[in-house]
Image (cartoon, rainbow, N blue to C red; front, side):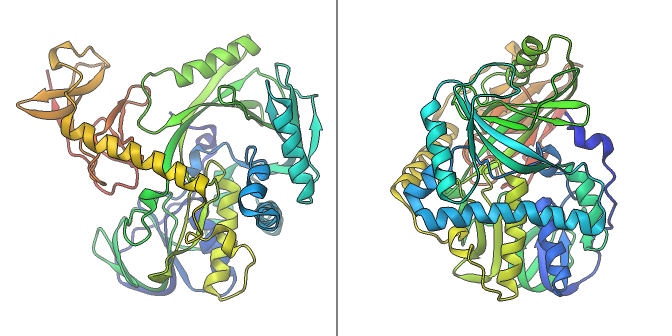
Length: 485
């Protein structure tokens, strides 16, 4: 499955790292957050190198719906109650500055990336009151949010909040416009970091005063302990031709009606049907999106389907800043909670200021060392319980399938000579087996029938049916073998 952004992918290729390097800053990870951070550091006079395990933009960036907006679900009323009006205003202001910074960079470099200012809407089909409360909250924070019941959605709503002058773009065309002048090394996987030494899989070491982790999910467990403070979620998107032309970007705020809509050129992108990684019990998410589109626009045609993975922080605020008090020269950008485009720019601006010792009023709001509220503690307890369940399941649960009973195209966990093994029977009859122990922290992997992958319900690592690593925090494959039955 490839997103529509991959159709016009024109990213440059970069060589792998083959020799030792010394620099002021090294960025690990070549997605939007990493590239933007390297870009701003370079343009502010800091020597910087970026290391990417695969190709730049080929992680979560290529799977975004590419909205740059303040409309981070119904967040601001909650933030005012939990962290206060001043801090909530700083969060909103940071994301507004992100929109302006994207526009400035695009204008300065004349980047043709389909950037356009459009309104963004949050809607509810069942609860007018919660929308009205959010309108009141954002207005108190100085943002011109407007209540409305008039939308271009194919169904009625109880209410919506309209944020004017938000933005959308083509993320890979944007990256192409800023990446060429950065010292980037692709196909360069980082194995570990020892203080200021970044050690790559192929052997070469980069020495740097500052190390920035922009790897989606941090792969170093201690210090930081981010695996105790986040979980990951899957979400899905389908691009259609012959569908409606929307008057902006839309996102639903109801638990079972959270569909998102936006246009990109001649396509309409419909998103939704998300779930926690590893809890995908059926292969119905993409089918449900297509069924909804067929109901709303009977003449529409599917042009592309894809999925994304998001790191979710318990308070919905990203972790941006110093990785740990024990490593003040390490920095991290993670936990974007489905708002990766605006959060990536916030991360780049904040981290580049921290490295240059420039005071930034956002530092405390996004600090990875911020305090834990009661609500945050409850979310962390839920995540901890699910992680413990994954460990216990690997130790005690009985395999749920028998090899002989697996049908063509089906996957599952079976018992082979007293060992639990993940098995997938491909359509051509070939059988693939893998370990079902996640190499990150040992949880039992679950079969994802929709994407033909093995997913970790504890911390979100994912692997192909052949055992190849797809998504971190794991760093290793799970092995595998093919049996030509």
